[in-house]
Length: 309
Image 1 (spheres, rainbow, N blue to C red):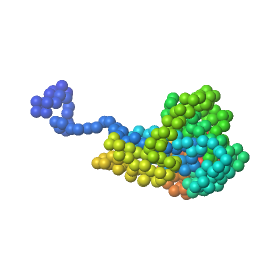
Image 2 (tube, helix red, strand yellow):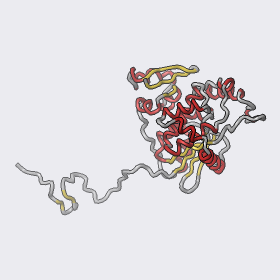
Image 3 (spheres, rainbow, N blue to C red):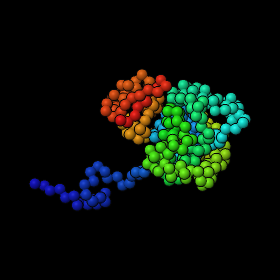
Image 4 (cartoon, rainbow, N blue to C red):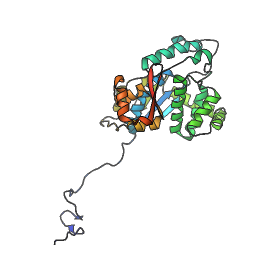
């Protein structure tokens, strides 16, 4: 019986062992992820309704193309306080009650549920308050800071909670695994206010005046500024302009089970956008993707949402 000797070296190929067909002298391969050559600044505010409307598109964009950019979230400072005069006269907003109708319009148009009745009986005093909490958490863990921001928006827009109140903020911070009492206390110190105003300064340098705004910039300091909540294609096209000569390759999206495990709560509009399905396909999609005992379906302001059980 013939015995193969894997130690034999081939003088022609200079190869020891069973090379088979793989005897090319040299080949170039790349095991690394694409180099992140683009800086992305997401300018937002905890009480920005159009930022809430952008959530479905932004999540998909980041999950599919985030390997091409470094993302930094900046607080924009939408509402410092209510005064005697108009806060936003261009949009007809002079006092808290004027916000409610504007929010309802955004919610109906985007299908990201917005209640907004707190503006009548329990108005938010300032968006700087939750923004400072965000900055304290961001210093410790940027990823959890964004989780906090998402949870705060859920409580505010969908469930009508005042996220400028200490008890609400403490509960939200506790949910993400930090000491809510300690974080909220720290957010009232001068260091947190300084950090917040550093964001404001950078926002001004980027030429941003409204939210949401996304600014992308490449290594050559060429960039694009996208104002307002736009489509996925808008953001992908902008990114493509900043990496000329390279064809963008989107990452495969996680399954709904993984997404729900990460996000905990998802609205119908978010699932539809993420998986490119129609509204009338949602129920069948959920049954196919998730075990019946893994989630529960609820409805809010005419829109369905799912939660982990």
